[in-house]
Length: 150
Image (cartoon, rainbow, N blue to C red; front, side, top):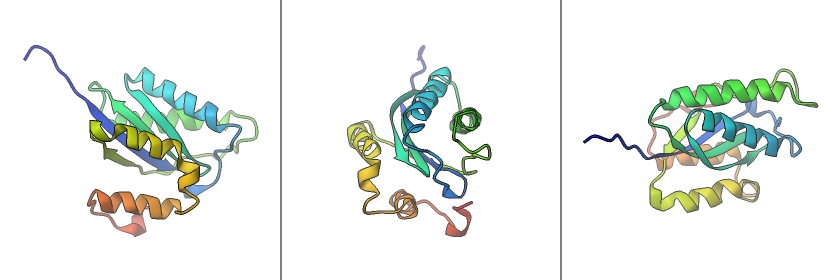
């Protein structure tokens, strides 16, 4: 086969360190745009970004040129530096160490997009911890809750 093709859709989730509510409404759209730009620079296309003051969800198509861990490290590093430069943002802003990355079938992309853009409404009924543990259980992930939260 002369051509390499890869279509890997990922639902990426991570929170601020200790789930501090540092993503304020005034910085949120700019942060999301900045993260989309980071992804573009790594040849990955963002389809949706949404979240809450303490965590973020990103639906993206992962480039065949970069490993997921490389993309996540770059998103966190560059966006954390950017956040620390924003007026009113604490200079001790950090993302949590870990992340969750879940594969998404092409037939479920629209449903995941809606889920991500409706985060604020969704979290009227469920905490981030409940949401994240639900994802882990749905994907039958082997995890120890003691190590999930930093």
